[in-house]
Length: 64
Image 1 (cartoon, rainbow, N blue to C red):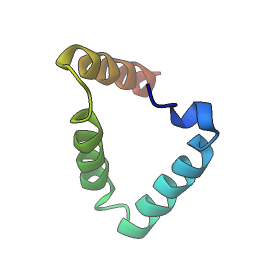
Image 2 (cartoon, rainbow, N blue to C red; image 1 turned 90 degrees about the horizontal axis):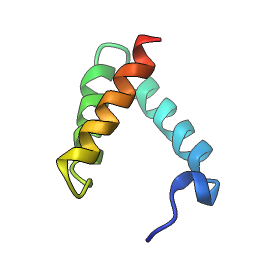
Image 3 (tube, helix red, strand yellow; image 1 turned 90 degrees about the vertical axis):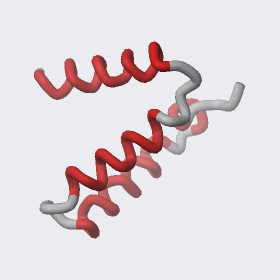
Image 4 (spheres, one colour; image 1 turned 120 degrees about the vertical axis):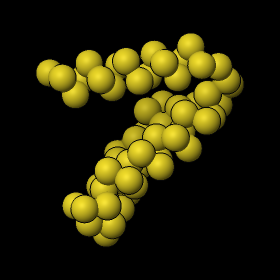
């Protein structure tokens, strides 16, 4: 199994790249950018159950 970004210490670098990319696309296009990225990342999941867990987790965090 490949190590995760958190395990390799690259999570901060990835988060910084995400923040910079959202700044470049601008506020109006950020929702589309994030939706496109989310779909690309979800498509890497092996099954729908794991993808649904990630969606539920993100929704819980957004609601707090």
